[in-house]
Image (cartoon, rainbow, N blue to C red; front, side, top):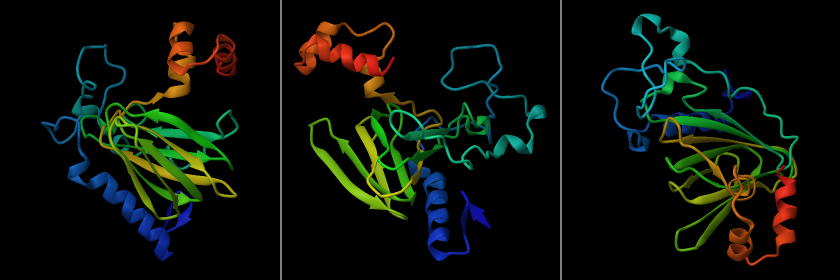
Length: 225
C-alpha cells in the first residue's frame, strides 16, 4: 500500500499515515458548526444563497465518489516566485467535506522554497513533514516569534489566525501535509494582500506603515504584477 507515493510497509511511513489520519479524525479539531445530518455533499452548482457553507446535493444524486478525493497525489509545480505549490483539499475541491469541519492541503517546496507569511482566518493548522527539512514559524498577537526546524515525521501546529510561514531549509525538495479544522479555512497571503490588492492600498499607508520610500513600494508592487 502507498500513501502519497511512499510505501506504508516502512514503519516510519506507516507512522506518517497514522498521524495524518489522526489529524483528520480527532473531534477536537472540528471548528465549523456541527452537522445536523450524516453528510451534506456540497452542491457547488446550486443557485447562490446566503448560507454558512454550501447547499446539500440531493441525497439521490450522492455517489461513493463524493467521499473520495485524489487531488493530493500529484506533486505540485514549484516553478514560481516563491518556489512553492499549495494543492488545496478544501470543500471547493472536495465537496464531500461540506459541513464536516475539516480539510487538508498538500504543500510542495523546491529547494529554498518558501510558503510566504500568511494566515488562515477561519482555522487552526496542523501539519506533518513527509519529506525534507522545514523551518516553521509564527508570530503571536504580542509580536513574539516562535519557530523550529522540523523534519520527516515531525508535526507542527499554527494557532488560528496567526501569521506564519514555512521555509525549505534542506538541500532537496520538501513536502508537508497540512490539516485544518474548517472545510474552508481561507488564506490571506501578506505579500499579495499588502502589495497586490485590488484596488491597491494607498501608497501613503504603506510608506508610513513600513517607514519606507515610495520607490520601495513601487518596486515591491512590480514584483507581484
